[in-house]
Amino acid sequence: MSHDWLLYMTAFATAFGVTMVTTPLARKIAYKFKAVDYPRSRGMNKEPVPLMGGIAIVLGFFASVLVMSPYIKDFHTKQFLGFLIGAAIIVIVGMLDDVYELGPKFKLFMQIIVGIIVVSTGTKIDFIMWPFWQYLKFLSTPITIVWIIGLINAVNLIDGLDGLAAGVTSICSICLMVLCFISGTMVAVALTAALAGACLGFLPRNFSPAEIYMGDTGSTFLGYVMAVASCIGVFKSYALLSIVLSILAMALPILDTAFAMIRRAVNHKPIMMADRGHLHHRLVDAGYSNKQAVMILYGLSLASAVIAVLIAMQDYRATIIVFFFFSVLLVIMFAYRSRTK
Image 1 (cartoon, rainbow, N blue to C red):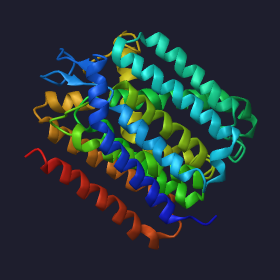
Image 2 (image 1 turned 30 degrees about the vertical axis):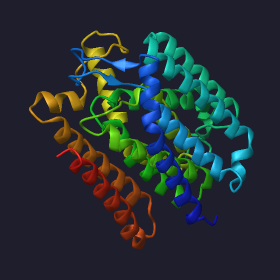
Image 3 (image 1 turned 45 degrees about the vertical axis):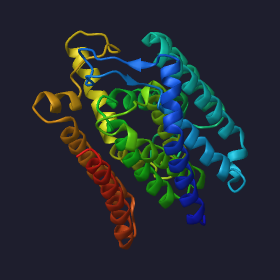
Image 4 (image 1 turned 90 degrees about the horizontal axis):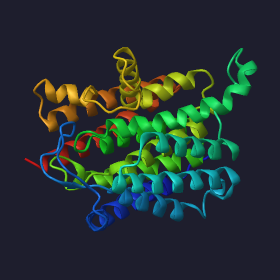
């Protein structure tokens, strides 16, 4: 499959620009609906910060999709319609949660509904290509639903420091974009390019000291898009290796969530109960500043992403291109960091 780099660059730039321009609007909407995160014992902010910045991310992402839709035929399928319906539900529930603080059971129920919608319209983790796993095809639906729910909550759980979720998702999205580019999955490349652009467009006002948080509106949406894009692009193309690549591409949110579940189970705590045991909390409690902790986690996420891409590459001459991509991303991260000095 031939790729149109100009289209992907346009997708990235559109999402970046629209998100950056609409972030102040999202801030006004948050104050209008009193969606504000006030200081609390588990939180890291010392001043009230508006939530619902995810509105800008969503607007940037779908503006990009609108620009790309005439050129990508897979945007006009039942599968993509299922993605859109699921995204709409995720965003609405996220906005309501930012305003009213919905209960975890209700949010989980709605995430299950979203997962069912996505798999029923054709997006599934395919076991057919995996050696000796074809007999587990009947598990494709539940495993896909668990994967979607898991990533939705994984990104939501790492959204605990200024700029952390937006920066880490940018890195994960670019990694997924490269993996999907190698596999030849055009629609997944377009989605991840748009997602990376939207995250980086939001980051200037979200990096420490944050002017606005993405809230559940943004964090759950980011996890949802990455989950669906990985099902379309990574799991469809790398056979059994896709498990390793997907975990490496999104290692930080996945492993942090896994450790949180194990930690709560060992301590006989409810799985969905929030705590201060996440890696970003531990770094801050160990004496690192917000910025230092975030940059450390960026570095860890970047390292795992590069490893994933290098494993996927059969032509190692392309390694230079990968390092260029991630070097540019690293420069952007440090540029945002210097804004607050």
